[in-house]
Length: 378
Image (tube, rainbow, N blue to C red; front, side):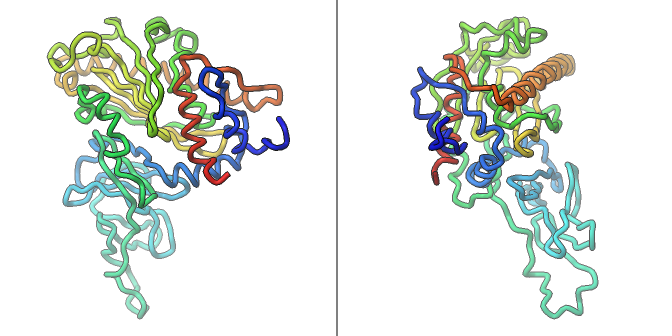
């Protein structure tokens, strides 16, 4: 690599200049460089929409979940009037974090000095503050973060100028309108940390080229490479499709589903909504990953899924769920092994990116997206 393109941002810019027919995998430094990670946090995770899970998981007033977005502790909570809001998870007193994990609460109480907030972030009370003449309870409220519900997803952004999600992802709605994704019910949610770069896991999801090999013990035999369709990506997302057969009936449209006909009844969409919401959507079930970097060599994973409304009402719903969850857990074990091997390999001095298959078109589009964000100041 010449000195002129030794910088990881410049290397990525050079990489995406090739047409898809001549494309190569992204440079190693894009995954291993702390400098590149800083640019991702600044230009991607601080500016684009990030998925915090399913809105149905926070169905009652006081239901909340917490996460960290680009270094900012955030809580998402259902207000007393039913509004889903995102706000800072940091006390306005001595700056302790407030809530942890998931749960339900009637009010938000700081674990350090018991300053207490209403669910909308306004300060309700603070003990032993009467002698501070500058203290005014009514002027204090937790900073609010943009939060929108979209097709059942909780989407948040630190960027006050981000386009509304419904506008940004209007093309996704058009593609999958007959699936009714907003009605799918989440039946499990977990968090994991894997020892790989977040983009390695994102790219692993975006291509099904690896399925026959990496998933030989589970779904590999059900995956026909000649039936995979990988169209050019769009500005805010990419996708590809796979046809499923009756060996996994829950992947097919339920007999009561009259909206879908022909091959549509067995078509699986693998949606990659930038930067890191990855959804496998079938007519019968869905599962998803929402990824956030945890350093260059680890990724924080929100992992959830469930079934369409048709299957949730089926008398065999519990059996369907058990079968699906067992399969997904096995697939995750395989994916973790593969993606951690990839990260180990790309850290090698002897490693070099190779040419992409036509089945890796989504990876090419993902690289274009990354470059459009981190290379803008280069």
